[in-house]
Amino acid sequence: MDKESFIISAFLNNKINGDDGAIFGDWCFSKDLFFEDVHFKKKWLSLEQIAQKAMLVNISDSIVMNAEPKFALLGLSLPSDLSFGDIKALQNGFLKIAKEFNIQIIGGDTINSDKITISISLISKIRKKAIYRKGLKQGMFLAYTGILGQSLKGLKNLQAGLKLHKNHRFVKPLLRANFFYEASPNIICAMDISDGLKKDMSRMLSLNILDIKPLKKLNKIELLSGEEYEILFAFLPKYKKKIENLAKKHRIKINIFAKTKRGRYKFYGREHHF
View 1: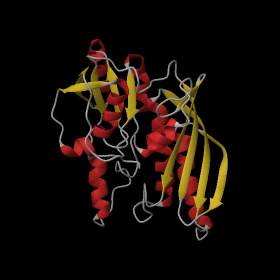
View 2: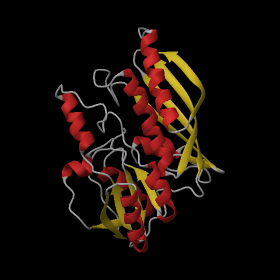
View 3: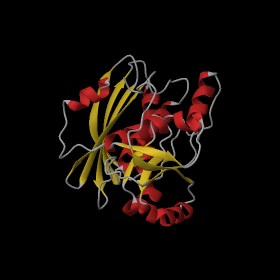
View 4: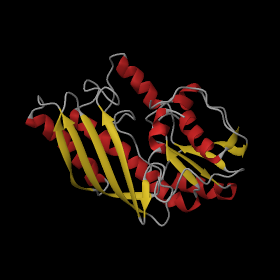
């Protein structure tokens, strides 16, 4: 058991705990952390971009559980040398994404710190039914939205001292809410791709005690690129045409890359958290 799983194991409540969020009645409660020098560096992103990305990666968790975010609580740990202009830039980033997704920021807390730390709690309304990572069965298709690899390439460019476009995937994740919400009645399991397809797929397969039969060959970049925030999802073969048509309607590329089978998928690699 890795340390993250060990921590989570102490607080399990199977009637409430979800995967990317906890389900209580018609509501989903989720939290994400965004730390300077862990998730971002100030020389890579503007303060407004930092706030925007912090909101977007948390909203991604709500979307894949088939929930619409309604309210947010912000926890901010900020260095004392930030100017009022700097704080205004952070505010603008939070408010811009909140407006885009019709979210009300209703409170939170602030404290002084050496580095920027952002903790966001979202309260989201479930749309008809919550979608979990659990429920995968033998013979289902596994697919993901979009094209994977751009986030890792962007990170390498930043590490080499280069700049990224303001709409680059690493700077501003592109979320697939409209497609996913419409396709949700035909989706069995889902999660966002934050630690790379290979690692996140292993979490879903391990939970459901299944293996995969690959349907297409994916390269190392596609398998390992993290912070993509595309959606990994599963569905029954009978819904393949319908999901493909919805993808065309929303102008989204989907990649059906595997089919589940009996067995246990083995992941070889390090844990991305700790």
